[in-house]
Length: 461
Image (cartoon, rainbow, N blue to C red; front, side, top):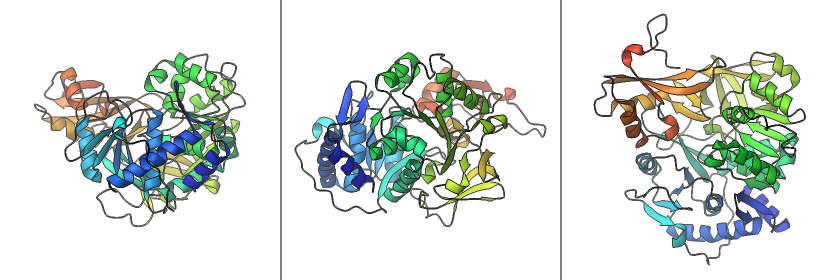
């Protein structure tokens, strides 16, 4: 369904812009032709997963489609990943090819992995895609793990198609998706799946926005205004950042019709402020782990929800999978759910998400985690992995990593408590060689300042 539907959109509107990032554009016809050419090349190079290293260049989307066409799993690696972590990802998923769609900000060389730039790829190859199978792995995304290593999550084409069908079954999202979908998340973060699914399957335009534009909100708003962004897909953290600027309102951005939110909890104050700034905008709050293809349920935030202490994250009568509770934990079962982690035994039975929740009047609410896992800037982070990496650094005897939260329960920063006390900047530089930037604590404190609970246990969440 995915490739067939994209092909039909291309056939009907070949010159329409499919992907835009700054001044770089790709029409549907260009995207299809370049993806087919790259697929022909990738088919000759092997069958193993393809590491694709880049940020928001349109060639990243060419690479994604090419991998889908030839049946090689797409493994997106953002510029925030250090080389050491990329090498570990390549080892875990047995990748043999590293593709550079854009110039890398650092020299890249991975053992037993062939590195190829865009200039190394012939652009004259032709490709007739065969019928593809839903069991084929579409992509593998890596998240933080408790073992001290990244954890690989393979998502099949069937998983993607089930998610896409659920996403576009909501008319409040499907209609603006036919126009311009504004991307915020890195393409190595599963929230981005909602971006490209919504845009490319609806015949709309995917507007990729860079970190630099997002750090300068005036530039970000200008992009949305100039290209008439209709559907914004982002994390609640980024939405709160936008709301800090008073120009983020319906009068300044009249084309914005809907916002799809996922990746972390949406607070009542943030939702209320959005409804004040954009009275007629559709605010869609969604829930789902990476293992279940971005999101499995969601709902439009209504005025009556704003009087509650906590917002619901989904309507169970219109979910993408079967959602049940066992001892307060959310379990997921259905066509969006993956079949098991890379290098581990297949999943048996419904997937235990680790998220705690409750159901009230047919609506799902999330209330925390069973483990030390947190959501920070939309990313899923296991504090145990950071601790293990810290304790392997020279001079560190013991470490505890905590998440410091605001009054709404939102994680504002990561703090590391260590023994003995060492220079924080030195530790920060050492960690950046092993962990993504968003997993590096911003604060390093001696262990004697560790906050304790009433039973003298360390407060880590």
